[in-house]
Image (cartoon, rainbow, N blue to C red):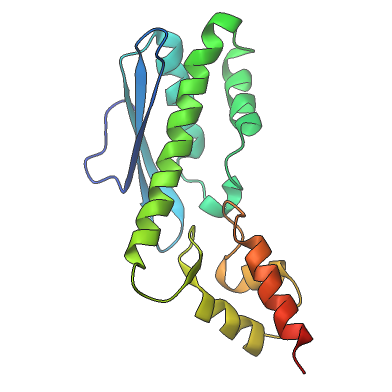
Length: 180
């Protein structure tokens, strides 16, 4: 197990648990804030061998990934990673894998929440994944003659993470276009 053990200086940590068997997996991630790259992924678990092996495979697949490349980290993509390594999980082992998914989603949500907290009391934050403010997006729309969310994303990464800000960015672009 290459990724077993928690990282002390992690900037994102979360736990998933199975109440049917009492097992858990806790992921700790160190995400380089400037580059948006997951620099290290570690885990701890009291689960079965399948849960531990699944956590290790998922940790390996995420290490070195850019947050922008994850696009919300869909369970289908995570499942493909597990299937590629072990084949399809039996019905009895599906919950072991789901606990790992739950913990990873929670760890990324923990990172987004910490980014939001950094901006408490400051300017409006539109993209929590990359810490892009409303003011910055308005500046890009005004100065860079953008026509789409993808244009804004190319300049500042807003909209490339979980995608929850894309609608707001589109509204900001539409409002700018509607102005005389």
